[in-house]
Every structure is written in structure tokens, then in C-alpha cells.
Length: 84
Image (tube, rainbow, N blue to C red; front, side, top):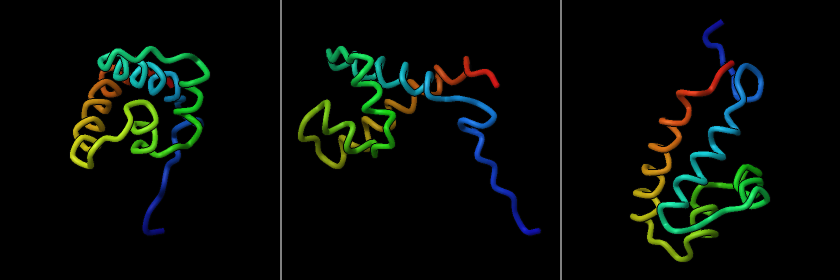
């Protein structure tokens, strides 16, 4: 055996609550209040660029990268609370 791949999300841990909170907190920095159904839209397997453009409109490639890093920062903070 040369390698092993672990798919922990949804198997060992459930990161969806952390992603929901991270997206909600991130979007609030833009004055966007998101509903539970909108959060479900986010977690329905969409690409980050599509999510950002859906909620923030026409953003540049540079902004996509910048906002992605900012959202990741929110997730890193929230993910400290994720339990197996």
C-alpha cells in the first residue's frame, strides 16, 4: 500500500455547523444577514467563487482570493470547537 486517504468530514467529524457559522460571520462583515435556507444553499456543494458572487455580486478574481482567505480565517477560529 502506497497511501491512504481519509474522508473525515461527515464520517469522523461533521464540519457543516462550523462552515455554517464561518460563512454567516464572514457575510455579516459585509452587512449581509443570511437565513438558514441561504446557509443550506452554501453547503449544497457549491464552489466558493459561486457562493461569493451569489452574495456579494460581481467581485474580481483578486477579491475572490482575498475574501476566500478571510472566510478561511473565520472557519479556522470556529473549527477549534468541532468535536468528533
